[in-house]
Length: 315
Length: 310
Ligand SMILES: [Zn+2]
Image (cartoon, rainbow over all chains, first blue to last red; front, side):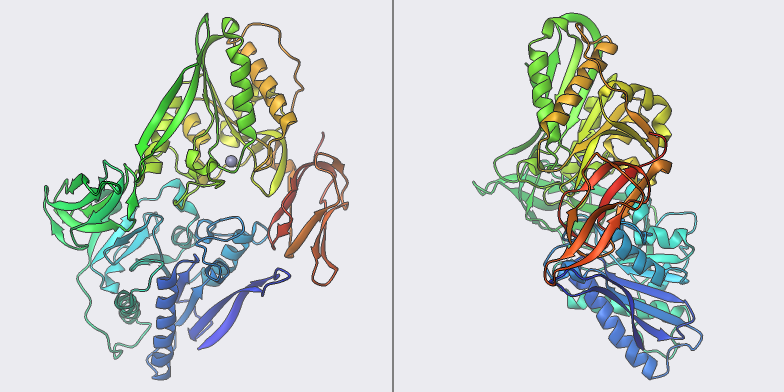
């Protein structure tokens, strides 16, 4: 393993330099797999997964299980500047590094940061990002990609995660890392695991296991690498995710468990009036499927997507 | 005076999020409708003055008014009331969730209802005020893809310049793009600076809007003379970004003509007393954007200069 500084720029007079490091494994001249961890300051889970992955790869490389014709780079964090002050986005102008790709080296601060990351990870055959959703909530662990003319669906099952979601990009998605990786010729995946602001160690271990499984299936790690058997992957279009929208504002109490099979008419949760403690709304499933997303906010407004149900009937 | 709800959503505890508009209906005959919109970004307040002053003037001139003026003073009431640029508790910039089709939250629902309400107007004007970092000369920004339709409509608004900028897919999620793409013309004004009111700019835009209304046949009475704007494409706009982090101090005046090589400002290091960087103009031209907020990082935008034949 080799740790290299891939980006740094002028420190503010009373602070240290803003730096981004990459951890390189195998043949550094080969661009096989690039992994990006946290791009936001509250992505604790995402930086930890990268750290655990680095630890594991170090071990596997020392044991001679890494293919000599492959190169891996892991960038655990591009958001230390935000993480150290407890902010999700770049603390000065509140911009999101993951909405600045492919970046611009003469542009704004976060465009320069994105450019630094992107220069280090583009041209890799595969790109894997530890992602977080723009709404507060928890998903069933899954791997995701943007629908472009370039995406490769056939190998997503190599992660052995239960679901693979294909997102049909909105205009706003065109500045994400996943989208730009694909536009520049890489096969890109985003891994969704657990919350952001908390650490879910079993989910983190599961994510590392999924990446190791992918690396073995892709021939980057030897088939002698000890791995657990993955799950069969079900492919879903994000358009088939049925949202359950709240009709009241108040405190939200989910009842149904994430990943559970639900039937139309099942009670999924409740919204309570905070000042009377009376129920304002009983929330029922509008369709059959797997409970795929649960909002993690306690206080919710009317018209919030509090659950997402994956329609698995067509599979 | 006729205050109406555009959309109303229950918040978690004891309050509604209500987007309101002031519908001013003229006493003179006419069917045209013009929409004045502002307050998408909660830290941009220049439009507050324009909304207020326009409503005051029109309330006194109902007999001269043909048709309808809808004034939307705040598309983001939760932001403006709490000194927050964005939608509180929400990741995305409000001007990146239009037309609100991918409904995942109350904010996207609200965005959809706003577009529905403005749809069909003969003209809409979305007033922005830069941000807290940069001071802007009064200007209209037009996406190059909509320039043919919008540039002629923008000339009477009494602004210093019309900047026709290049298109980017991500900008298709703005309010202006969403309206223009459904055939409702929308002009974007940028002027002044965040968290402040520049009365002179507000008065100029108010005059411009009244002039435009007169030319559209919505308002009778004397028309104030307005100055024609400079019209420019991206090719003539150059950016100055800091390459060092520190405290920015301007040396040139906003709105002045600068020469190639002239120092626009410096990045200072108060810890050592050194100058970290001198930022120079890349060409002769008009300094139409200038950094207002002193804390800068490598990459922070310092200024924009408009060159070419002025
Ligand atoms: Zn704005």
